[in-house]
Every structure is written in C-alpha cells, then in structure tokens.
Length: 135
Image 1 (cartoon, rainbow, N blue to C red):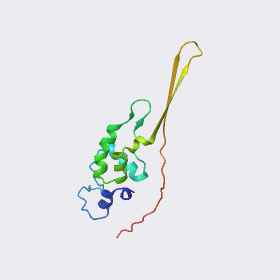
Image 2: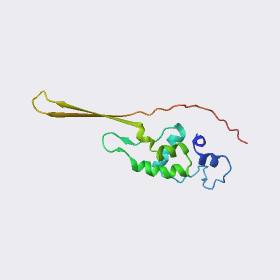
Image 3: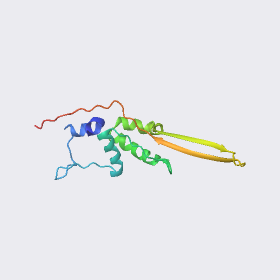
C-alpha cells in the first residue's frame, strides 16, 4: 500500500536502494515527524487526504497544511502535493450562514445561525491485490 501512491516508497522497497536504516530487528527507520507521518500513512494506506478543520474555533489548520507540504514532496506523493499546493482542502468544506430580521416584538432584532458541513467523497477507488513471491 505504501508503494502505490508514493514514488519514494516505491523506489525504496523495490530493491533499488541499499537500506541503510534497517534496525537489528528488521524494522526500517523513516526519518519523519511522527505526527505528520500519521497523515501520510493514512493517505498512503486508504487514500484519505488530511483535512484539519474545526468548525467551532479556527476553521482550517493552515499551519499543518504548510508543514505537511515539504514532506509530501520529500516522500514524492504527487496527489497529496497537489491537494496541499492547490489548497483543495478549501473546497472540501461548505459553510452556510442564514440571517433573519425579527420584528414581531416591535424591536429590530437580528438572528444568525451558521452550519458548516464537511463532506469528502472518494471516487474511482479500485482495490488490487499484489502478491510478491520471495526469492
């Protein structure tokens, strides 16, 4: 799953690179911020883009998006790069505001409500099994 969406991991695991960061137990060290790598791993495994939006406080977490972009380039994840560079996350949140003027009481009063909604739609998803025979 890591190799399908990342040119970095595709090259890394294809055998073309000498793995220098292999631990004695066989684990491979990936030099990345663990919090950021969580977002990359979620995208690489499931195709879920990072959407850091809090409707009650600040809206989008632009700092997170800015912090993720250099690593998305480093790990060569083209679709995630596009998501971040083109700010496509801004198109993933719809915000509707309704204003009403209430004058039945004799006083001019304004009422306001807001309903931000988030909907991510995953399209054209295919699942393919790849089998690797050890030599």
